[in-house]
Structure formats: structure tokens, C-alpha cells
Amino acid sequence: MIGLVSVTAAGAAAAARLVAAWPDSTRCYDGPTADAIRRAWDECDQLVCFLATGATVRLVAPLLADKRSDPAVVCVDEAGRHAVALLGGHRDGTAAGCGANRLAEQVAGVLGASPVITTATDVTGVPGLDTLGLPVEGAVTAVSRALLDQEPVQVQVDVAWPLPALLGTAVQPDQSKPDQPRHRIVVTDRLLPADPHTVLLRPPSLVVGMGASRGVSADEVEQLIGAALVQAGLSVSSVGALATVHDKADEVGLVTLADRLGLPLSTFPASRLASVTVPNPSAAPLAAVGTPSVAEAAALVAAGADDLLVPKSKSAMATVAVARRAPRGRLTLVGLGPGARDLLAPRAIAELRSASVVIGLDQYLDQIRDLLRPGTQVLASGLGDEEARAQEAVTTARSGRSVALVGSGDAGVYAMASPALEFAGDDIDIVGIPGITANLAASALLGAPLGHDHAVVSLSDLHTPWEAIEARVRAVAVGDFVVTFYNPRSLNRRQQLPLALDILRDHRPPTTPVGVVREATRADEQVLLTTLADLDVEVVDMRSVVIVGSTNTRAVAGRMVTPRGYRWMS
Ligand code: SAH
Image (cartoon, rainbow, N blue to C red):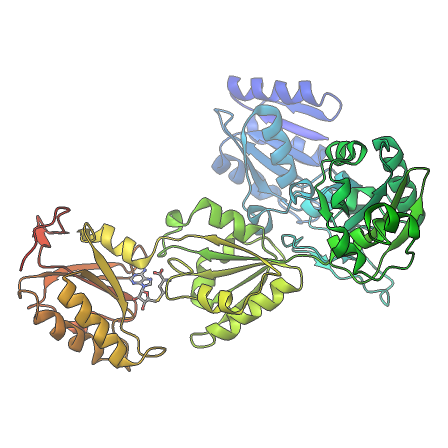
């Protein structure tokens, strides 16, 4: 029973809407507020109070007894804009109705309000099972509810697939323990007996090879595929691709079927299929199209597999065979931006939330840890072992998982994307999400120093010999580029910046503007505009960038401006 406590007319109207939606499970309490809440508290498992959170806290405080037995409490504001889960967010809901988090969502749904939930896992979002991009079957409601109520749920992965982290409360199946959680999520292409506590996620792991005589109907092939899969205990929902020989690329029945199922139809030359060893070669296709196997060979080639799951079966005019393809892992290179959360791209956030493994330097991971789905595996590295971590990211993606490799600014700028891509083959998908670099963040803080041609030089001689860096700084000086120095100065590297500035001083007047930006867009941000003559290198450290203007750059009203037009100085 849900007790509804309202005081104002607006509250009573909103309560009436909940009564209309749930006539059998709601009861209204009125009269003096403290008294109404006390009665509702005693008689109901859940309370919705149309009151300010502060007022509600004061009124329920004397009633609090035990987290396990106290009712769940949701507050709705006067304007009906927010449904706030106040108390008992995750209470086990089996007998006494769900916890406040779920109740807040339900109330918000009826009132058109936004649910406000502050318990950590819900804020990071228990994954909606239907949002993972795979077909879902089975007990979706029961398992979603178990997830929302933070009951443990078993996750069983029969077929690896690049999925988001499934859940915070996931446990691996362990047959040796008698007390396994009832609820299960199984990632599988197999048919399993229906179970009221099990959800099946269907990865598109099966590839069906098809052979056909001219004029075959889509229905005949579809029935043959269905029968072959059922007999082998495999789900048609996991068929991810169809394949055949080039000669059948325009066979109407096959093309129609691919359309109907919404699946790609790949075709291969007969010579390619003929080179594959299959269990059941035959003379007929050899005579007709020049390969002893179409269905079996096409399934194996399209899946990149050595063995078939289902050997050839035949109808009057068609043959089919099934193979399982290896999962194709995904590696996303995610730029986190300079620091401020609202300079992190929404697309980067979406990618972080769809990864099951996130890899990067610990200081950057701390920047985004709260965004990750519960259950996400986080592999942090210290400065220095970036290359090993980059390789680990590739290896993990190769095993079929969904991996995000993160870096501050842009992950491709003096960061881990390069070592990762040097190491990655074409066997994984790579996605790059650009980030706002320190250079751009600093530029925006200083004014418009990058308004004309500019260069970026890292002064770190960790990976590059100093002579090469010096030669570049000379070229930049001669070319009159605005220059941004990354990694300008550390405890152990103090000489590089003065040397680089000396080179520039030979080519630019002492009045040339210089900007130093430390911790751009972070809590300790410092912005300094000075000149080549006055720069005190002591203010520069590893968390800074230094932007030196060209001979055209000016300080205007305390801002650094490089004009757009060429005013070439000889
Ligand atoms: N991938 C990053 C650069 C990493 S190299 C990017 O795209 O910006 C590390 C160097 O970047 C630091 O030594 C410092 O020079 C610079 N840097 C990174 N973040 C910064 C920030 N918020 N403010 C100032 N400099 C920063």
C-alpha cells in the first residue's frame, strides 16, 4: 500500500492523479500533517509526501526505526516537477513494494516529473536490459526489478561479446556454491528452457551459410534455417549474418530473406569457398557454381571460423549450415578534455558508459570514475607504464570486449592513442572521440593567441632526444609560429624551457606576449599573461602549458591576441 500525504491543493491534485493511476494500492491521508504521516507510516509500505524534503525529514525523523522495515519515502515538490527518493531507496521490494528509487521513477512516470535519485549505483545507472543493443528475451521485468532493488544477479557469458559492463552486483556463476542468486542474465546464442528469473541476451554470433537452386523461395530457406537452428539448440535471434556464393548474390529468395530478417548478406567468390575444407562437399554445386560447398564453406568463411556448429542440412531447393563468429572487440580512444566536467563531450560520456573496461592514467580516471556503469573494470596506470597499458587495452579488446582508453585533453595528443594504434591490428574496431586539448583550453583562457599559424612542441625529452626538440624550436622561431609548449618543466627537467625561450628571444622582441596556463579548467586554474622578457620560469610546472606569441601577437586589454591577417615582418 502506498500512503499519499498532501497538504496543499496542488499536492492533493497530484495525489489524486496517483490514486487514479493506482486505485487499488494507494490510500490518501489528510488532516494535520504530522499526524497524517504517522498514520501512513504505520499502515503503509511506501509513502509519497507532497511536501518539501526538509519538512518531510523533520516529520519522519522521530519515526525512523530500521532500514529494513521502515517504509520507502518519496517527496514530490509543489510544482510536481521532481519526485525525490528520500528514504529506503533500495529496500528489498518483494513483499512490501519496491524501494524509494523505483517508486520515485514510477511516481515521476505518472506525474510527468523527473525522478531524483541519489544512491550511487542508480545515479550511475543500472543498465536498462533493453538498452544494451542486443535482443533480450525472458524475464526482463523480474530481472530489471532485481537490479533496481540491488539484489545479486548472476551473469553468465556463454558467448563473449563487446557489451557495456552489465551490473555492479554481478557475480560469476559458481556451481560449487549451493546458494546461487535466483536471477540470472545469460549472454548466449543457445536455446535455454524458459525460466521466470532468467534474461537471455542474444549476441549476433551466428552466421548462416546458404546454398540455393534458382527460384528458391524466401519462406523455404527461412524454414530450413529455423529447423536447423532449433535442432541444434540455437536461437534464431542470434543470427547476425547470412552468407552465400557470389553467383547467388541476386537470388531473389535469399535477398528477400536477408531483407525480411534485417541481416547483411555477404557473398564470396566460388574459388574462395572451394579453398575451404568442409565436412560435406558435394558434386552438384561443383558442377553448378564451381565449388564443392556453398552453405558450409560460406558459413565458415563469413564467420572466420574453422569449425561448423551445424553442418549442412537440405530442403528441396536450399542448403544451410551454421558457424559461430569470434566476437570483434571494440577499442574507443576517449579524450576527457582539460578537466572541467562540462567540457567533456556527451559522446565521450556515452562511450565511457558502454565500455566494460576503462584504462588510463589514475589521475585521469579519477576525473570520470563516477560516470562509469557499476561493474566496469577500471585498469589504472601510473606515469611511465602508459605503453604497457595501451597494449593491454588492445589485447583486452582483442578478446572481444568493449574497452575505453582514456586520456586528458585529446587521447591522440601526446597520449596513449598512438602506442595503442601502433600495436592494434585490423581485428578490432577502433573509435576515436576527440577531446578539448590543453592547448585549446589555455588559448580560450588567454584570449585568441592561436588566431594564426601555430605549432605545438613538447619539451619532454623522455621519448625524444633534446637535439631534435631544439631543432624544432629553432624552426618554429624562424617560421614565426605562435608556439605552445607542452610538458614544459618538471622537477627533473628544468633547463629545457629556458633554452627554448632563449632560442625564441633571438627571433622575437622582448615584448612578445607569453601566456602561462596552469591546471586549465580545473580547481587550481591559474592564468598569467606576461612577456618574453618578464617570464619567470619558476611559475611553470608539468601541469602548465606555455604559449609564446609570434611577432604579430599583441596584448589587448589584458588578453593575448594573434591577428588573423598576415602582417609579415621581415
Ligand atoms: N592529451 C593531452 C596532453 C597530455 S601531455 C592534451 O590533449 O592536452 C601532458 C601535458 O599536457 C602536461 O605536462 C601539460 O603541459 C599539459 N596539460 C594537460 N592538461 C592541462 C591542463 N588542464 N592545464 C594546463 N596544461 C595541461
